[in-house]
Image (cartoon, rainbow, N blue to C red):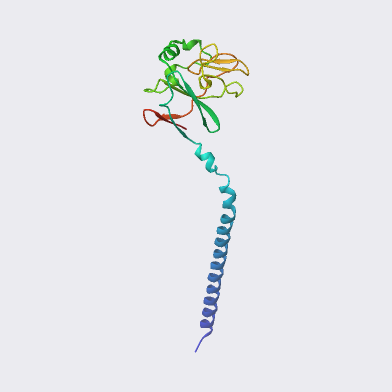
Length: 189
């Protein structure tokens, strides 16, 4: 026969089972709501990632073999023009002979080119004064007083190594990150 203690024990067991079931329902509901919130928010977070066309411009491969000595080309990288110039022996000698101490933004020719590829000068074609695009070898022939680049908007003159020599620009033309993947192929970016 059941005693009073057995009835109390049975009531406590029933109560414990109810608490355990209720806790499970709370946890399951919270987990379901959390997963739903993440699923609802993800499209808003994902749309902030760069689009495919921007990722495609993150780096650009250029074959420099067709660039004749003394010529230059202009390519686009991240929406900016990049000047790639195949320097002549005379231009290299003149750029190396410049007294670096006399420059507004001191940089040697060797600091602006890569070992083993000194004949190629690769730089972003944006004037460091107000962001204009200088004229130069990519336009057909050297410009300015130093046979390099000339910004007609405000009169900045850059030499054949892209160093500021005259005018209001405070800095040399900026060098992008680049590496030669072969003797004639370069990856910019």
